[in-house]
Image (cartoon, rainbow, N blue to C red):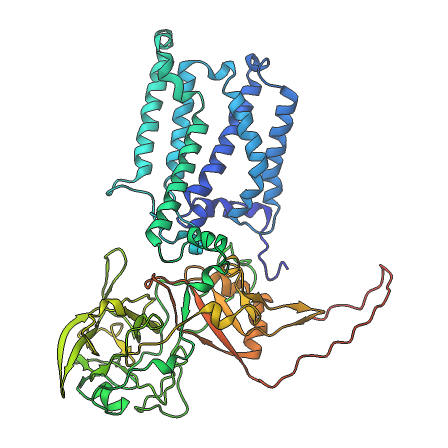
Length: 592
């Protein structure tokens, strides 16, 4: 266990606090404020106990014992081999008792003077300001639609924490003034000191209200798309399968390919109109995204002294036989190279602008089962994210039009939604609702005018796939490898079983979004003795094309289809027996 990890020593406990005050969901304000207020309450109670004048207000023996339990709990926590922030949840009971003890301590003589009340209130606000410097984030789908999920809460620029800090510093100055002029402070009106009677309760209540309002805002802004709140309501209404009913899957990705409007063969229609600089093999070998840690290393995932667990190799793979247009590039998502042409603009030394104008393709009849027009593409592509921020890249647009006898009239262009990450293969999508009803043909326009080697793009012909829900495709009986991050959001899927020392082979794997996939790959890797050692040994894997209903930009995760290398293998026939052994019996040493 210590060789593979995670197994960190007690003196590496600072990793837990490093994560608590990081700019990730582990360092969110909702996680910081309970810990900070608990520690403050411990110091408050300790000060009141030490103060001799407080004996009449607090039971000294029980208070000391409660404080001792809290202090020892931090020591016990340091002894755990893993340093997760969510382990602070173990303080839920003790923390509530400490908060109550701190509230009683505030009624003692030590905290009754106006100057001490104001000074204590300033300390509470300073800690609250530091807590508010964390993002309002939650892991995985918990962040969908939540404001400030990836940054410090702010209003039109100024950070909220700065305002809280300013108030705290102002109170600190007032408290110092009252300390120096304490004889004149007795005239303060009682109503002016009312907020300082229970500052911890007021601040924590404000954070609770803030969290509830932000989650409510997330649910409202997401609707009708998926949110945890909507999922809970659906469960009460008899639809308990969570995210599985909102993830849409292309069960047969090749069936959605559009037919050329002029009756040409797919190769001619795709590259025959205008093609300058696009080649069937113009795809870069290295497709590693620049913004993703594919290694998933770090103190919170594996032992830094143990083996480094790397992510999967993200590179272009090649075919033994060329595809329909002579390409030797393996296509993603199960696209058939014998039916699907591909063109890319990558070259070692680009010297001219690359342009591609495909032929027109017929649009099918509109239907709820086909809500998207999809173009599978790779490279750096110009796009605009949900916040209106432009990601620089090369141009790829979908042009729609209408047929008029034997000719076609262009009506307009749409920039597809790019879910990222670049330069990996991904499915650019255009909601069919964004294409006018009178349009019955589309074509793709691509342009690479940046000669830098990193700037390139590749694409396949457009398609309008029929999609089905993950629940309908996978069902509740097929064995599935559910990454631990996603398990609670797919309650109807059946995790593959381990019975009598024999594991079921998984038919599918469901992963989280790319923000946490590196960690999942590390924990489950063959080097760490994880489930991927079993599934990768027995199966070939294909990432399926998936989308989140009504939230087309969202990276919800991945559905991976497993195809066994030996499909006709039969399940093991297990013979059962009962044997009684002594407690001192050993089957022998474990051979590494």
